Length: 295
Ligand SMILES: *[C@@H]1O[C@H](CO)[C@@H](O)[C@H](O)[C@H]1NC(C)=O
Ligand SMILES: *[C@@H]1O[C@H](CO)[C@@H](O)[C@H](O)[C@H]1NC(C)=O
Ligand SMILES: *[C@@H]1O[C@H](CO)[C@@H](O)[C@H](O)[C@H]1NC(C)=O
Image (cartoon, rainbow, N blue to C red):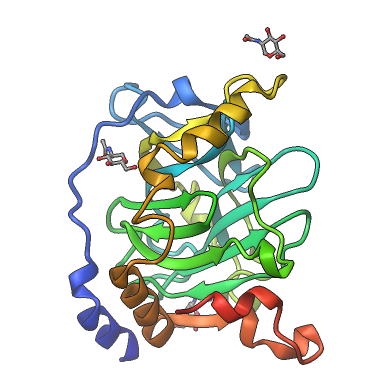
């Protein structure tokens, strides 16, 4: 089976699964919908939170404040067994002016079949930048770290600290970049059975409800929070901080050789769909940023 081979060639990527102590969930997040499906296992310590999808409702959370640049991550264990039709999304988004969003969407599957990880980048209201990959591990067996490194030069999508995608700042050639709107962190689980699994052919089996992705180890120790969103002073602080912080300095200003290798491995072994090669969508001409999406 093709997937088994891919697992082998990517074993060097498997993460250690030791759990890091998370800050208390409710210090940094609030529930946006489906409160009745949100659970705090682990004796209510607030270090782990489980979202839930039932026939009645999905559920979701949002960070209390947005961030402007940083290395932000969280560990997630996805819904196991038959998760077909469920979509667990984990993303950063601005809430005002021109919509910006950095998206991880995990498309569930029937038991034993692989999840798809779809990523997307919205800048100034425009998305249509989907990439889809298979992961090199079973994301339902344990917690894995999903995050972004975001600075003045680039956005890296990271899985267990390995780069799976890059979006470069190419404002010099007219491609819009995410560099003036702070973004909140969100996650939710919802019913995506009309499209998510095998193009919508696999529906949700409600016998398996509640469908519960689990979250822990929220880490923004190396990021710039914008705690006062009514003024711009925090935001301006983040612009100057980026040049002094690890995430905004070398080697994080360009892809390292390891990251170039990571991206090549993703492209050659795990990529299922890349909007850049879907020329029918773009009248024969790939969007401008595509030239630099893969090293
Ligand atoms: C689900 O499994 C099928 C069969 O292996 C695969 O074609 C598909 O890409 C998988 N993922 C989704 C989300 O449909
Ligand atoms: C949090 O992330 C930073 C990188 O941004 C890393 O150096 C640090 O070890 C992480 N902390 C924990 C507790 O994992
Ligand atoms: C937030 O910023 C505004 C405008 O600069 C200021 O008037 C207000 O006092 C600040 N709020 C806090 C809690 O610092």
